[in-house]
Length: 434
Image (cartoon, rainbow, N blue to C red; front, side):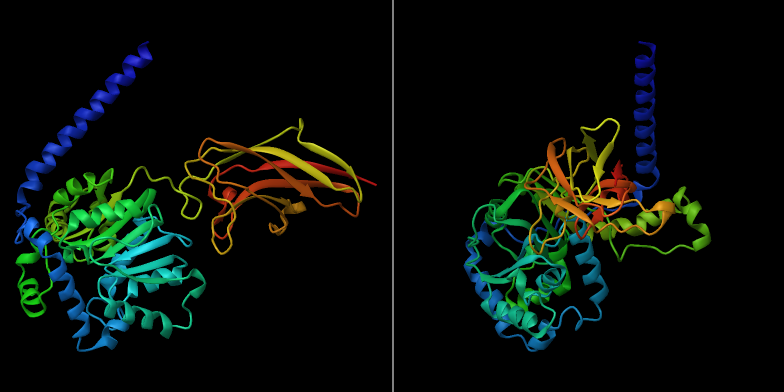
């Protein structure tokens, strides 16, 4: 009882300490951060009425492009934005939990460089745009690269700006790179994205912030090309997404342009709070000007393509864990394997990494080189966290007598051995008689 009271007291102290720190930071740091209202240049109802008109303008933009080769060779043709493009893409792939084998829709694909990067990564891409001319350029981008993964069957799909011509639950992820702010009928398209995503799917987008439409460049683009340059106010977007099937929206508070370099010898002091107020005041405005936004359709469960915590409990019907056999005699090891981590184990699938197999290898005497690629038994179906499955491993006969130690572990093919990320393997002593 006293232990329980003590835990509650410590928890209350921790909450009070956290609240006090928050108030101090707001008083001495946050007061220097200006948060502008969203420009909201456009009326949402008016934009929805103009959807078809604006879609035509998007097609005209690509038809009238002065330098199609510039578009085909992006991001390499745009040195002023090259580093930023790669930074954006890395964040969207990492935090969107994209992996080879995923079917990824790119909304507003344009000339398709993002889809092409994902294709080379091993994703099954669908480049989607209202502009057929843009998608023709995207196909040319794919054709010119001899390393394009045509085995993943990349698709280039036009749509009418209203309904996406894909089946319900047909995509694992959606990626949107600097394109959602061009969409006039945001609620309708968000509903379509929620429809085509699998449960647990994610929309990962990089978009400008709350005053984008008021910038001089945006006004010039709208005047010259007739395209839509809108604001993205993340609070508005999150509320809208929740009305059409998304469960929650998150934002990653990071920005390449706002990052500040510090002297290497001052790193520890910086981590402990030195220059925190100065650093935050430099970073904060950038966090309002550009966003990395993630719309979630239900709870995300990692799988073995992009695993979280991989833990396996391998139980044998042997006590002690010893098997006897004669030379020339095969053995069958039967074990119950429990998923004790937070990651869904996937079965084997051709061309997709992350398929899980029960694996066995011999422990080398004297600590020699380990030859892991010996025995395998694949899963027949996915195994969810907390579930168990019974597997059998066939051990081929040995030609000579002696003692061996067989190590049983799981491997997510092309990703990692469970033992290498903290899971505990099981060892079986093999006694081979003549």
